[in-house]
Length: 454
Image (cartoon, rainbow, N blue to C red; front, side):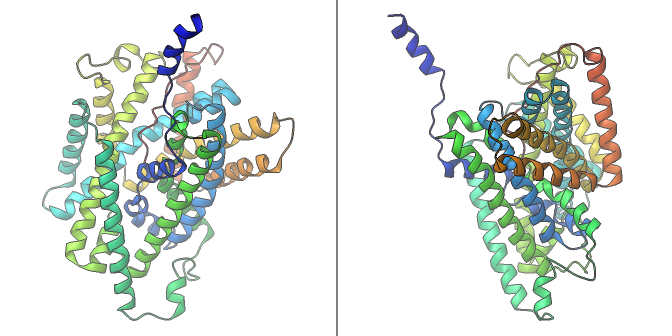
């Protein structure tokens, strides 16, 4: 009788395992967005001296090894899906705290770079309105909608993804017509986006690759669906890796076509919105407007989600007393959202939009992301190789290679990004040390939301 009485309760607490492998891959592609490399194209071209395709593919290799580590760690922690949990549990709670603090940097910077990009895109339509006015406008809209608790539905997200797919298809067709409708200088014209001997520099390409990582940010979100996936031990790992491959190949095709339409030797009217100008050259003013709206909508949705995600993260830290609980741990009674944090993140993002460039903001975001990725690779190495009874090469190589590639990319971030990142990390470590009396007492186990990056 006792077992019969408890059975309904146990079954009601379980999530339904209905997501197939392809469902997971589709989710990952939508979260990352099929237009991912377009917003950052100009910055990549400038930093990589025209080798955008090469930087995208190199970043994909590094992310593939890291994706394997994420997929494997999701087996051990199927409901967590956060780098700070993996590092804190497998290596050391203090290092988990440091990893978590690096992720805070990502979450706080994401809405900022979206405000910058949306403002630059809006200026393409209304150049008479100054940048600062657009930045304030988008900050107010992001904050206002999040304070009202407005969220996009799954149907809206799917419709937006389908629309982006149509726009990308039009771009490929238009780019092909433009490329083959204009003269070029033979075979080297088609290989130059991969390797141009006149401009190739290893340091420049690695620097560009460190920014290209931004294209893949969000693939780790697949691990949060472990409790709803069919055969999660197999499918989460496969979906995470295949999502990186799909995004990497699609992104490489997009930037390859873009580089053929607009060679790196020609300057862009605006580096931040370079892809919009490329689209205009490929198909005319009408497509300039369509692509501008498409990327504006994509960054608008990403910025809103990032702001709410950062607010949730700060709420988790406030609730756990890692930050002042009276402010960061408060929830609006009516709308059930961390109102103080939404406003706080909005103000920080607006301040950053005035002080930083899109390129520097993107690199600072990757500063924190690459630290988290290195931590996950080390955690996977410790759990599945060093602590395993049987030492398998397949459990050794991916995390080691993933760590080394991420470290190399992290070292090749720009000096200003590294200085700003080190200051941020030092402040976090100092705060953690003060909070725990030199890390002698228990560290907080704050929560990282899993639905914002992309």
